Length: 182
Length: 452
Image (tube, chains in turn green, blue):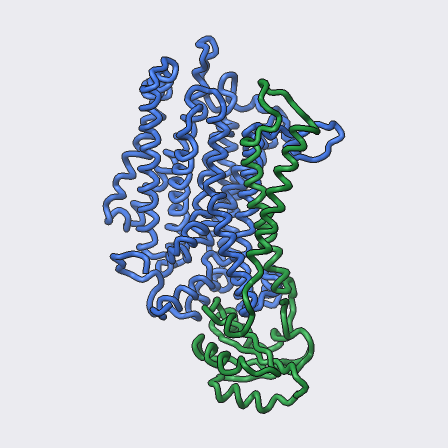
């Protein structure tokens, strides 16, 4: 699930002129078994993750686990504190006054779920990872501005990049680079 | 897109990825530090020092330096706490609720509105701690196994408030930071100075804009918005419980939670306008924060203002209808008592003046809108002063009655939080992208692909 392209397998980086060109190139290449693809773009493009076969994000589950954990443990803590650890009789009201336990329970549900959301994104994206071999290509900076990039990584036994380079050019790539090993 | 009578697009039609990216990153990376900014920062730092001195004075001599007494135990510290936390509502409202409602226009105002939220919550959070009397023991609010074996009391609304404000501050920070990670990578990639690029590179944690990154990020961001939505409502609701759960005459009312949340949205949007109007002028952002944006914010403000006015009306009507002499007295004391000027000032600022916003010309006039927003912020401060201090100064026993007059230390502490807010805001616009670049880029593509 985490970041691909971390090993030194031969990889090409191609830049496309627009989101549409990138999407059609990804569609044309997706069914090849011996390459793996990843795209880079300055904003999320609808449907590209499905085209590249990334499946769906497990974030909802992670956040739900965090929320349940936060809520249940806060209610448990309140119950334990007010009923067992430090019972105080206030105007004869029940020690287990569940309505008053609801606000902190809600707050902790949201708090722990949000912390899980942040840490979950970082974990699934393999971040922080301050350097990456794609950063060696100067042009790749445009991925965060106006560049639409596709990486093609040879995962099979075939290590020959030339035919793939031609194929990318055929699909309308503006330029193609070989990603250096780091 | 979102508005039937749309006249101008949210982003100019000639804008493309590169132009908006360079415009927004240029504010931070290319623009030299201006003299106006330096003067502003100087004023902010003076205010910050005023804050430090007033806190130091308070620590040295105790809460007696303030004008509080018995029965008015909650003075300016709590008034300002509620005021600042109310201002802090607009940011998350814009970011979360408007995102879920697919209001595209939020994309160019959400980032600095979120920053405003964070800084306002920081200012607000100071007050209850300072108000404790023994602020060095603030951590007793946290449930931890102390050697005294004493634990917090969760049946008290003050504990709920601690959790509500703490959670709101933390979740706002997470939401703001997560939303900024892609833009920080843009800053890294566009910085020409190597050291600057490295700083942004560390802050963005090595974000690569890959489709996988975007997929997880987008899912998490949407769910966070869903989580933050009830949170926005809950914070001021919990703050209002601090009052309405008690038995003080004018506080013990079920109208408090909705009325507080309405007021928070009202003054929060007023503060967003107070910040965005000078910012779009100084930084020439009129193409991204358009007149239509101001118009929409003014409409929300008008609606929230009407909600608040309805709240005042109901509050007074219920006090009369109850036919309970003390409650009726509390209200007649507001209308004609020693603080009557505050009450009528509130009616003018929050109920009458905002009616000008019915006029499209006023809504689209930046200067008029700026002045109205400032007045609304004053009005909302008066509202909190009336709710908090006025309700206390006439107790059930006439022998308890007293006047509350804030001292110079009350006012200096209030002025000091403006210094803190201004300093943080100016550092934010100087160092971080004040408008969400990736979301504006997405908006451009959506407006160019009608099929989307």
